[in-house]
Image (cartoon, rainbow, N blue to C red; front, side, top):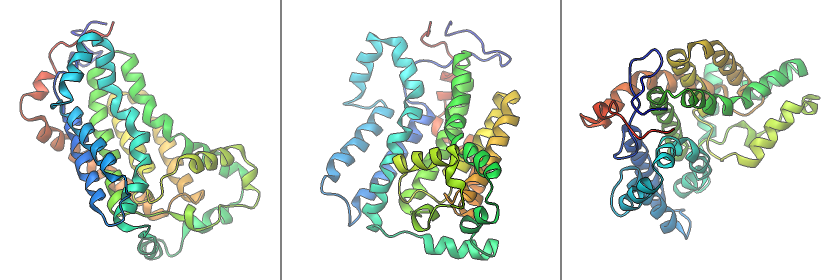
Length: 321
């Protein structure tokens, strides 16, 4: 694939290799600085300097600053194609690590205190009850439970599937058009989890029963959450915010896939409440956050582009094949 080849249907050419920071890199660096401020909290761990240093190194690497820049440049000269792919994908591949540290960061600030009581009061006011505790009991049917738990698990496919489709098709410019709003949604959600931690009903109440636990999708969803859930990461629902954002982005860039992603998004949102994973308020806030960021993303990307960077994205880059 030539670096100067136009994308199908867009007339644009591929972005360059990782020579200088893009808006999404600056966004990530900003997130690492802001989230790292939580390590100034009174309950930070004894080894907090190591984590603060990791945040600083990550920010410097994203911005291509000394002392990390010479290393990145040397790697780019030695393995140019691999360096381009790594530069394109590192943010998506870092998501599990960024998610896993959220509980430590919010505990550093709040020492294990959470805002569930406030969110539950919002829940009562908005919905006249606690749907996350009552919905599955009102509809205790495997024919409902299993599709909703499967839709909840489709979150990972929603995250990585569309970017991979674009990348495999050689549409790197469209890949980057998807990457910035997607990462903005993740990182905005993660800042809520650091500075406004909410556990969610899964930590406070028993899981839905009544025979639903016999379903394989139910069991798989709970195993996944038990293995990798980060405490305090409930409000707003990043599952919903990301799925809603991807529904919009797929409509722009992969329109034939939009009906599939939209159905999965709706099922995921319903499954989050039905399964007792999120308050209904978390789900509503996830949709609101996605709607706000759809509008804000182009403006923020332009603000982070520092003028000529977008033009630079239209110059030929390092061929990947």
